[in-house]
Every structure is written in structure tokens, then in C-alpha cells.
Length: 165
Image (tube, rainbow, N blue to C red; front, side, top):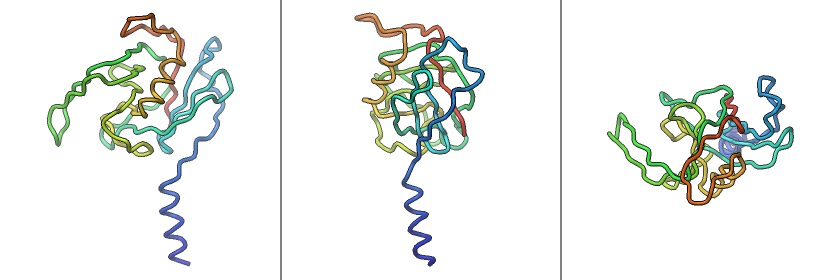
């Protein structure tokens, strides 16, 4: 019995469940496009009104660099962005051309991560990493559409991100 239990636990550690959630009550009624990021499961589900339309695995902030919970409007979008910060272990880091960034609270963003492929577990400095192809889909899903040749635009609360534990 114990070996079966251990096997089940290992399997559970590898499986992620993206569950459909109800629209947050505090989400403005005019908002049609939003996403739910379940930090416990490390999943992201994009919704159009009440319908789930896309799902992917994420890598959110590690312990001590936790991704904030709550409901946030997407403030601005960048096709690419250079991200610079300090890591307590590795020192200063600089990541150029980080793709498909949707910023929702100050320097916190949901964005593509080309430097790893370990999605489904915590890994970041607080942002929410997703595979680049999925980040591109999400970036294009949220209005406003990026004008040809532009790299950034204000979102003006047309999309929202809801982070829960």
C-alpha cells in the first residue's frame, strides 16, 4: 500500500488541474476578456465573458518573490521588453527581448519566457512566465490590438488578470 501511495503522490506532483472558475464579482461588467491564474496549480485560463478559451501552464514567483494575488487591470503591453533586476544568489540579471509582456501591477507582468521550459512550478522573481507561443496568443487576445510597427501600448483596463492561491 505504501508504494502505491508514494507513486500516487509523485503522479499528483506532476499533474496540474485547470478548473473553470466563475467571473470575479468585482470585475467590471463591461470587461469581456480576463484571465485567472491559479498560483497553487500553476495554471492560467483565459476567458471571454464566462467561457474559457485558452489554458496553459505558468511559472510564477518563488518563495520570497511571490507573485501578488488579487484582481488587476492589464495596464500596458509590450511586444518585447528588457527586464533588469537583482537576484540574491546570482546578482544582477538582464533579460533582453522578453516577449509578449502584459503588465498588470507596476513591474509585475505575464510574459513569455525563452530561458527555461519548466512550466507548472514556481521559478520567477515574481512575474508570471508562460511559454512564448502561449504568451503571443494571450498578448493578441487582449485589446487593444497593437498597431503595425509599435512595440508598446496602454491597455486602458480592457483586460484583467485575477491571481488566486
